[in-house]
Amino acid sequence: MGSAESPKNMKAAVISEFQKPVQIVTQPVPSPAADQLLVKVTSSSLCNSDLAAWLGHVGARTPYCPGHEPVGIIESVGSATRGFQPGDRVGFMPHSQTCMECPECVSGQHRYCEKKTCVGFHVPWGGFSQYCLADPISTVKLPDGLKDEWAAPLLCAGVTAYGAIKKAAVVVPGGMTLNVIGCGGVGHLVIQYAKAMGYRVRGFDISPDKLSLATHSGAFETHRSDQLSPKDKAQTKALQARATIVASGSPAAYELAFPLTATHGRVIAVGVSKDTVPVNLLEMVTRDLSLVATNQGSRQELAECLEIAAATGDIRPVVEMRGFGELEEGFRHMAAGKVSGRLVYRLWE
Image (cartoon, rainbow, N blue to C red; front, side, top):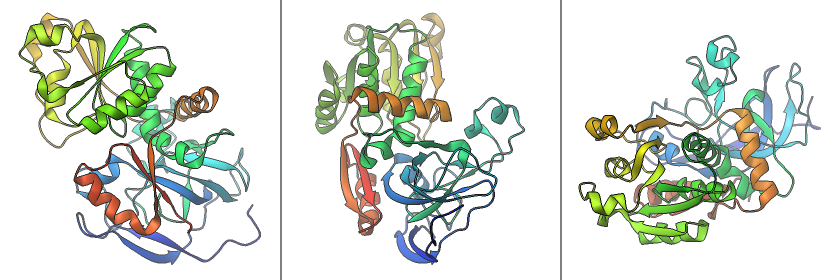
C-alpha cells in the first residue's frame, strides 16, 4: 500500500570515513519489503550516539547514513505489515531486521537481539535521509499535540531517560530525591521526566550552561561537579540520594556517582565512554551499592514516554532547529562540547 507515487530519489547524509566531513548526496529512495514501512522523514535530532559513531567508537559500518531519532509520515506500507497506513505520523527506534526467535525478541526486548541491524549505523538510509525504511516492531504512532521537534529527541534520549528513572524507582519511591550527573541532551530529559513522575531532582555538571538547563528543566538544586571531591565524605554525604543517574560518559562522573549515592542505593549508567571508568568495589560492597545500566527502551516504553510527554505538557526537550545542510557543523559543535540541549534538523527546506 502506498501514496500516489513515491519519488525515485532523495537527499541523504553519508559518512564514508570516520571523523571526515558528512556529505549530503542524492541517492535512490529505498523500497520497503513486505514487513517494512517507508517513512518520509520530516525532522530528526542529533544524538551523542551519532557523534560516537562518527568518531568510530561504537561499531558503525561505513559507508552509512547517520541518524536514529527520526519522525515523519508513512509514505507506503509493506504488503505483510498491519497496524499502520500511509499518512500515519510516526517515530521509530533504530533496531530492525531482528531474528524474532531469540529470548530477547520473544520478550519484546528486540534492541538486544544479536542479529539486528541498526538504522543510523549500518545502512544507507537513516534519520538523516529524506526517506527511511522502518521496522514496525520499533515504530509507534505519535500522540497528537507533540510537535515533531519535541518528539524526535524522545525516540532515543527520551526513552533512555524514562528507562533510567524506572530503574531508579526500584530503590527510590516517588516524592524522594534523585541525583543526576550530566545535565545536557539526555540529562535534562531525565530531570523533566523525573519531575513529571513525582521526584525531586538534584543536578550536577561541570558546565554552568548545562546547570542552567537543569534548573530550567526542573531541578530544585544544582552543583558544579568539578568542585566536588569523591574523597571528601562529608561533602558528598550531604548530597546523597538513594539513586544517582549518570547521563555523562566522563569517567570523573562515575567516580563521583558512588559517593553521591546513599547506602543500599543504586547507580544507573546511561552515559558511555571509550575510556576505562573507575569503580570502587570496596565502597560498593561495604555500602551495598549496585550499578545497573539502561539502553533505550522497548516499544512499549517508547509509547509510554511519548504519552507522558503529550499528556503532561511538562516534557519539552530544549532544541535548536537547524537546516539539513548544517549537519556537518552540528557534529563539530557537539564534538567540541558546544551543544547543551538537542540539535533537531528539518529535512525538507
